Length: 289
Ligand code: GLN
Image (tube, rainbow, N blue to C red; front, side, top):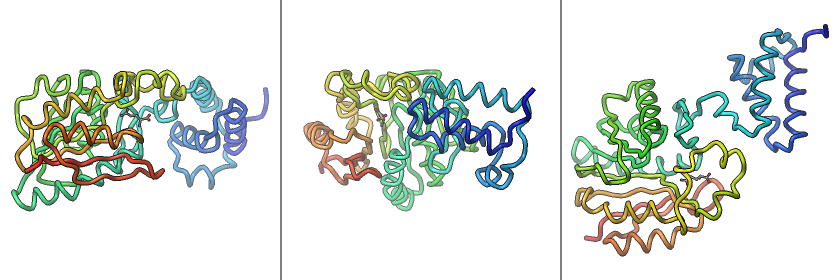
């Protein structure tokens, strides 16, 4: 029997195998997976790197290494991902929250806070909520608000409800199974969504981590990528208070097309924001007065 590996040796070996498989985030992935699996912090990984890895831990590591080599993303393997300071459970029915989506949250917070300051409360709807990431981040950052989160997937809504309970936000977080506005009755101060926006033609060319593990329903925006925006633009006026706003994540090349669509439905562009890579990523509209 070979001598047990040290933590350092295990990290080096996993990193090398990821790297040889062409995974360009090999070093980070090795660290995040091993730390997550063994319940260690990033500091423990460095400070304790001469401790030996037990046979049981070695087997656990080997199982997740195989999953990563099959291109499953690290956070799917660990079953959770951090978004705006919240640890969120993932399920096969939910998109893995992306850092760029935090810009949507950040962009909407001042509007939501102003509404609460003016009226004491604000109600918003998160359409296609997935893990609940956007709604839960807004609820946590902005006391006095309440959210209705919709999704076409009941499994996604179960995951979102679990996440709400996990963070003690379930009292202000309600869910509704709905295809866009179909089952929605009420009006809201704000409508927010990160809908599917990738064109059907391009979806098949996405990297395997996304194509094979994120739900297609959360990615595929139809022939021109705008199907979800059309549904939202058509129903928004009937579900928005007169002084309400609509906040959307968009694809990097959709600022003009999504703006034109909302303009034709009686909205005007209030603000546009770029993502961490400098690409157009967030649009905020209000009804034309
Ligand atoms: N930003 C995601 C991606 O590029 C797409 C999410 C979406 O379609 N809303 O993988």
